[in-house]
Image (tube, rainbow, N blue to C red):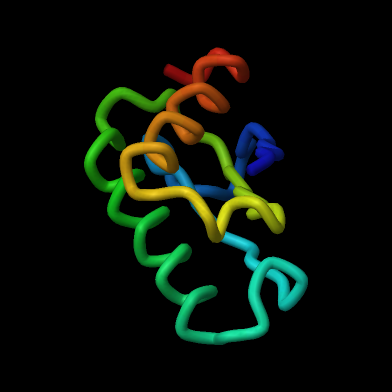
Length: 88
């Protein structure tokens, strides 16, 4: 899992963040698995959204090993990435 982020400047509604989740076919050939990872990512972000700095645009890129992680492992990855980016 990797993260890219950008601070939103003028022209965007203040106090809101934007999130995107990118899961390529290299992660899993099955669309069901790719969609599962995106759903889990959205759920984790919804759960911790109040703790994340605003206004930023975040892009989460899933790597091939991400398909093997369970929910708790994925949540730890998200928290680690956001804390390294000083967004939490």
